[in-house]
Image (cartoon, rainbow, N blue to C red; front, side, top):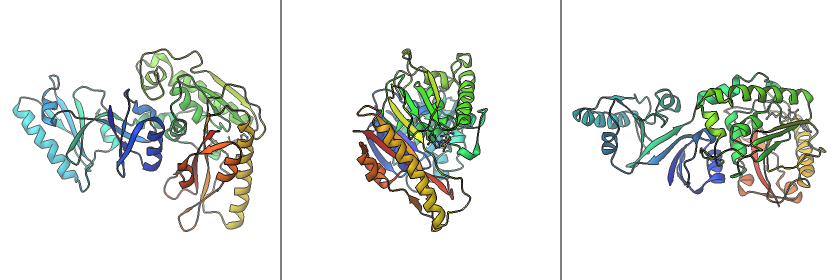
Length: 395
Ligand SMILES: C[S@@+](CC[C@H](N)C(=O)[O-])C[C@H]1O[C@@H](n2cnc3c(N)ncnc32)[C@H](O)[C@@H]1O
């Protein structure tokens, strides 16, 4: 089956995430891609995708007329080049007019922009789960039907409601944590994800929600304590069966990494193992099925570092990162994916200074994917320390 993904704020990273998981991934425009999957992907597991849609196999009017009885809520998002809010709204009103003539009651969601925002889609219930609440996507005369919208409220809750947070260690956005895990490629249910710099536990939290098991280590005992508290909170609030048919519960029961299904999680699914340890010399316990982490990113900064400061930060970070990867290399099996976010620093000219560690990393027994040479930089406008994502696989 062919799917359309509306890509997130950093389309190169969203595209890399889709490419790691699906086949025939192809960029349609700068913020849209299509891909193939045998099973329906769950948008709740794709940190880099804002909306997911399937091709509309009939004309939009025929599809809408065939909906079950009752009021229809309709949104039309036009992603074609040169699309306007007026044109998109016009399409929706045209459909409403004909549907009304057929005796159907229709509410049209207002287009403030040509493409309805994720928040508007979500808050109008156009996320694909409600029968008569429909968002159609138009792109160059091709029509698609939205089957999933990124649940920004769920991400915000997972980010902000956790009991143990620490601004100093950096706050990894949950959707980026998902992306780091997904960049490891498809993993069997119950796979054990290691984060050797677990901090407050965002990667491990997302791993558990995706039906994997979590293995976290960190140099700082306080961080281990924070991770433990946060994962306990997650168990009680996000993974608890008492939440009923929640997104988290559905995800946890997923049969494969990117689908939701009915098969039972494997016995290892959901297990948590935490230890204090220095990633440059720690001996981890087997099994390690994948490694996804945000390494030490150096000191938080409020302005671009001067040359001398940059040099010392780079030195400190590269010694930890290279020390960690060298130590890890002898402890994981051939083929194990390792996805690591490392720091890159904003220069006064607006570009980012990246650490060029690729050659040293290759010498340690890893294959480095082509993306890593070009760089996958994750940052917010003006952010001083960006995250540079590198994707490795043990030779
Ligand atoms: C950028 S933070 C990671 C934050 C984390 N992603 C989270 O969800 O909160 C880096 C972490 O690396 C830890 N760290 C620094 N040097 C380390 C080392 N040599 N071995 C293991 N952990 C280390 C720090 O204690 C800190 O918790």
